[in-house]
Image 1 (cartoon, rainbow, N blue to C red):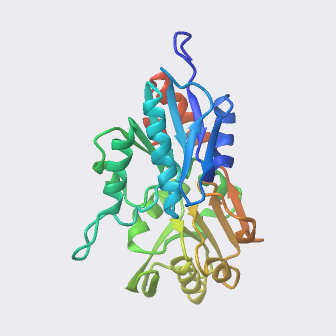
Image 2 (image 1 turned 90 degrees about the vertical axis):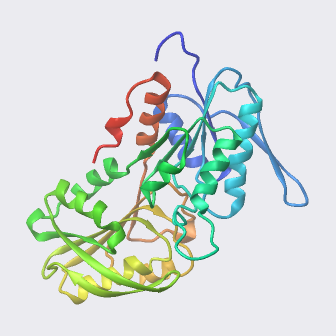
Image 3 (image 1 turned 60 degrees about the vertical axis):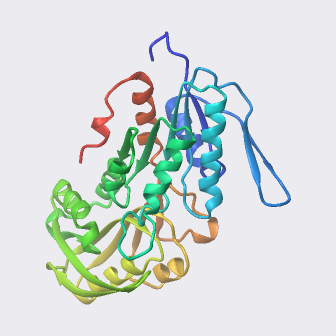
Length: 317
C-alpha cells in the first residue's frame, strides 16, 4: 500500500458480520466498530463509532430480504457520506432483488434498477457484488459496478472431488445457467449437458427436455443460487433417471428458503458445495453440505481498488 494513503475502513452490516470479519482478516485490518440502536416501533439507526473523515470506506453486507438488510446498507451509506468519507463502496456479496431485472409483465417494477438508484442516491461511489443473477444489472449503474466470480474458489473445490474428467458432465439446470455451466465445463475439461424447463408459476418449474448424455457419468449441477431448491432437485432427479452415477450440486448463494433443506435431504444429491456470501443458519446446514469462503476474492478486490490496481484479473473466466 502506498505510504501516502490512509488505511481504508471496513464495516459490516449486521447480517454479514462473519464474512466481513474474514474479508478484513484477508486484507489485514480489523473491522470498524458500528453500533445499531433499535427502537420499539421497529426502526433502527446504525452509527459509526470511529472517524471516517477523508477515508475510503467499504461497507460489507448482502441485501437479501427482509428489507431491513437493504435498509441497513442504505442508512450506513448515508451515515458515511454525512461523516465526510472520501470514497464509499457498497460491497454486497449477494445482491438481493436481482431476479427482478426486467419488465416481463404489465405494471411491475424493475426492482434491481430501483436498488442501484437507491445505493447511488444514498452515497455509494462504487458497487461490488458476486455472481449476479443477471449481469445486465451492472448496466443500471452510473457509477463503477464490479462483478466478481466465485469460480476462483469453487474450481479448486471441484478438483478436490478427484473425478475423472472424461466421465463427468456439467449439467446446466436451466437455460439461464447455460453460459456459466459451459464455462465451468470448458475450464474443467468435462462434458456439458442442458436441461430445458418450463416454469408454470413462481418457484415452480418442471423438466421438459434433457440435452446431453449422462449415463454412467458423475454429474455436477452448477448454478448461481439455490433458493427453494426446486430447480436443483428436479435436475438431480432427471440426472439419476438418465443413468447418472452421482450428483453434486454447486451454487454461490445458498438462500435455502421454504422447503429447500427438506428437498435436498430427500434428493439424490450426494454432495452440496456452496459459499458463504449468505450466512447459513445452523438449522439449514446439512450433512452433505460444504461451505467455502469467498473472503479471499473480496479481500483482493478491496485491496486492488484501494491501491488503484486493476481488478480485471478477478473477472476473467
